[in-house]
Image (cartoon, rainbow, N blue to C red; front, side):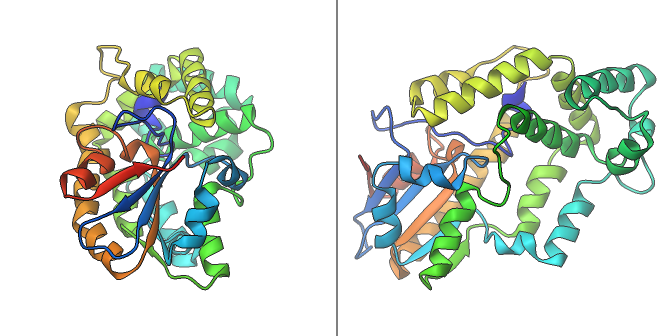
Length: 302
């Protein structure tokens, strides 16, 4: 279930073009004078993992600018943080007690006690999390699960931040493919409340499976085991917990196609290092295939 619910927060790389263990690709040809690069990231990977990706430091030096899914500093402004917090909340004066039945809330509380040792019967937890939407709760539960497994996790020292911080230090431009408002809508507003509830209950009803899936995906990413990642992301349970084709396209394919309307002009203007959630790279609707179809040469950097 972690694959279906938390893929907005944790994107992993797969492979096309017959390459089995690469995260970094060079983009050349067509009308660009100097190659650009694209690297698939794992959004909770530490900044230090940059040095584990072959050729990445050289690509960072070579590129004239950095482009992420969004410009990270937009998230850190008071306005950006307020937008994010507001989007994570249920509408109006609703709380989890209003949107979940007594039985559903009992199942969520049981899950929370295992994860946090406390649940919504605790006044402080109710105050802090009781107005969160199901999508926001799922994201928070996923992050907490990961942190429990990785106690050295530092939210201020993550791989996506590292690229943009490095660019700023070198006085290189930093830009984004999307706006903060768009990402907020994708993360928290893209599903109906009923569908959000359904997916959250998939998570809380299957904690051992969730934890195992998260462990396996993290292990596969950090060991560059692309074939294993493909297998994990393609796994289906043939029930309501599976992402629908429409949901997957909204999260990945549709955004990839939109990026391909922007990337050519960006690369023509300056050699660029793109860093995006690695789940955006593979497949027929993946960025690598779309770039190739558009006439660019896409090569793995070894």
